[in-house]
Image 1: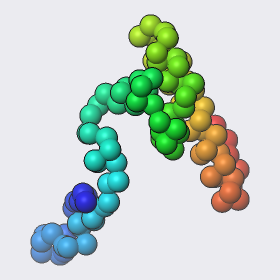
Image 2: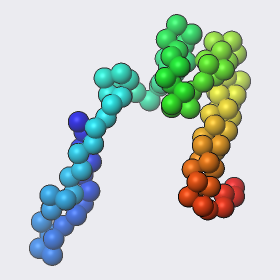
Image 3: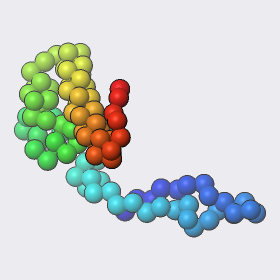
Length: 100
């Protein structure tokens, strides 16, 4: 369990308990906190569960074939496209018009 601390104070400047928000981090044990999550795309470690995080088998293939610069651009473009599609579906499910 993790905690988010929000600066909520009363009129005297005392922090209120409402400012502590417990959160369940289901990925902490599965994924170490790291800026480099490329290990998720390595051929031997790729898991279809990662598609929940917008990481596909196609991205894993690109990661294992292309050079560093080409690789980053291709993977980011694919991931952006997936996120935008899900975002659009979500917004339209709310009955709103989605425009970029």
